[in-house]
Image (cartoon, rainbow, N blue to C red):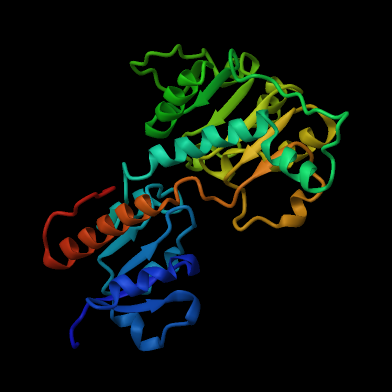
Length: 308
């Protein structure tokens, strides 16, 4: 069909979107090396917001009129830079935060109750008549939530329902049924479990520093369902190896996909491949918003969920 708007999908794992878009759009995939002539046609980039977006690429696309994030997060995009150039950015808010919170709670339970370790032990013949794995109860565990946005609040509600005591910290005060710690370091010191659920940007890279990790301590559990760059990953691994931190349960990593050899000999971890928000229902919701934003952009109508 002639005159169809052209899209460029940037990340390989978004390739399945092609099937839902190609009936209305000419779809190119960045990793396949689009033909040179496509450069003059592309009107929208479809991206996963956690990946850095190449500004030189954007400047080389003369007809570009939209950056459409398939995800809720858009920390890989320099939004201010786009705003100066009059380039709209959309995303998919309010779709998967409950699923991410479910995953965070699952990581807490899996780590504290040693579910993954128990599975491995049983399969390796470690369950014998004279052995019994004893783990701590969740009741009374002190959960500190870093960032009380939609994900953080959903985590807090779940933790409370599981009989855990909740506190939180964020850079700005807000109305909350849970007390706010005076600082991140104070929250870490007073928590058994620290859940990272805040947004990531250039200002808070490495927010969970060696000092914060050591404040959480040798009995503490660090859970990250936000972004990998929020945690000093090298300091985290060192602390797990020498016992300065008790456990870590991670769904996100500094580099993704993370190198499995980096974690091969790191003890007391539960690791998942950034699947916290990747439920069937959430993906369908993100797809719906993507399609609505693309249609609105090319029809000259107000965008459904603009960042700017």
